Length: 90
Ligand code: SF4
Ligand code: SF4
Image (cartoon, rainbow, N blue to C red; front, side, top):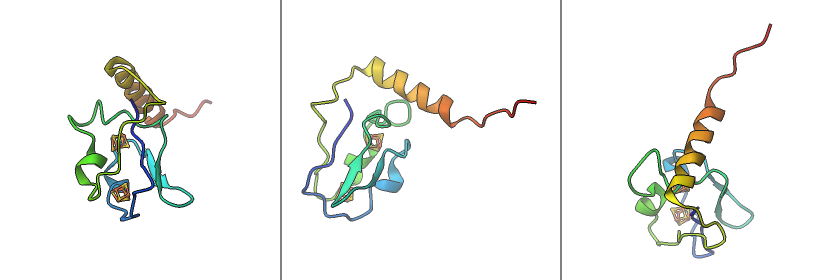
């Protein structure tokens, strides 16, 4: 499952730089997680890094984005491929 940030967020800025997938960004009122980029840190770390650092514990799993560990691993691999520099053609 992707994680989500609730309105309890105090915009402390601590989680954003910890995300290995650049899934966290400032939303309209508080930080948000892009479910297309959150792998629950699968592929990078054993534990979700944002949850580890959040001082107010406002990052639960997102029940609207249910994924198995295998799906999270596949998302991680897709993101890694996208991050590779493209070879110019011609
Ligand atoms: S669980 Fe990991 S990948 Fe997902 S938002 Fe938090 S730090 Fe980023
Ligand atoms: S660490 Fe928690 S409180 Fe701080 S910006 Fe991230 S979600 Fe919000």
